[in-house]
Image (spheres, rainbow, N blue to C red):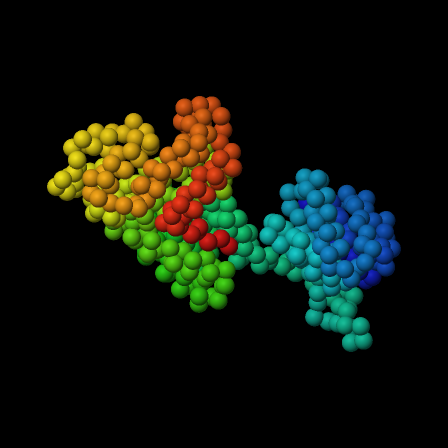
Length: 401
C-alpha cells in the first residue's frame, strides 16, 4: 500500500498534481484551520479512489505542533500497513513543511515537492498547468545518519557488537574516500575495544594504535566536535593500555585499574554478579601488584623469587585456599622482608571488613550460592577499595558520544 502524507495549503493545483502523479492508495492530509476546506474539497472529489484521513493543526505556524502531527501521520500510515510512504511538503506553511521534514527524515520516507519554472509575477506561485513534481532524496539516507545514530547509541550502551554491525552497514554504502577511511578506521577502533574488554590487551593495542590516529585525523578535518572529543578521550587512555602490554603479564597497578574499569562496565550493564566477581579478583591482584612494585618479583612465579624467600610460604602463596589465606601469606612475607605500612598489610588489617563486604559475593550464583548480587553490594566493595588507596581506583571510562 502506497500512502501519501500531504501538507495542505490554500492552493489546490499543486496538491492535485501530487495526487495525480503519486496515485496513492491512502492519503493523510495535514491541514490548518484555514486550509481545511481545501482538504475537504479534495476528499469530496478524489476520495473515492483512496483511503483518507485528515489531521487538523490548531496553529499552522507552530513547528512543534507540525512535528507532532507529522509523527501522527506516520503512525497512521503504518497502521494502514503502508509498504511505501511519500511525504509531499508543497502546501501549507513553512513550519508545516519544516515539521514534516524534521519528523520523517531517516524513516524510509520519500519526499516530494511540486514546483515549476513559470510563476505568477504577482503571487510568486507556479502558474496553473505548469506544475512539475520532483522527488527529493532524504539526505540522511545518503549521509548514513540513521546508521551513525544507531552506532552511537550502541557505543554509548557498550553494545560493541551492534556498533560494529552498524559500521559494516555504513561501509556497504557509496562513500567518499574520507568517509571510507573514517568508517574503516572506526571499525578497527571498535574491534580494538572489544579485545580490550576481553583482557586481550596486546591484540587491542595492535588494533587501536593504527586505527585511532586515522579516525581522529579525519574527524578533525571534518570539524566534527563529538567525534574528536570521543577519539581524543580514547587516545588519552592508550598509554595505560600500552603500559599493560609492556608489563607482559606481570601484576601491575595499571592492570588492576583496568580490571576495575572492566568491572564498572559490567555494573553499567546491570551485571552486578560479574562486576563483583571482578572485584574479588581485584583484591587478590592488589596484593600481587603491591608486592611486585615494592619487592620486584611476581608473587605467583617462583622463578622470580629472590634469595631469602621463605620456603614455608610457598604453598600458601602458590595455592591459597582463598583470599584470606593469601592476605595472611602476604602479611608474613612483608615481615620476612622487613616491610612496613604496605598495602598488603592494610588489606590484612581490614580482613574482617573485607569478609563482611564479600559475603554477598559468596552467596552469588557465580560463587557458592543462589542469590543475585545487587548494585549496593558491588558499590560497597568498590568504595572500600578506592578509599583504601588511590591506586585502587578504576581507569577512566571510555568516552561516550
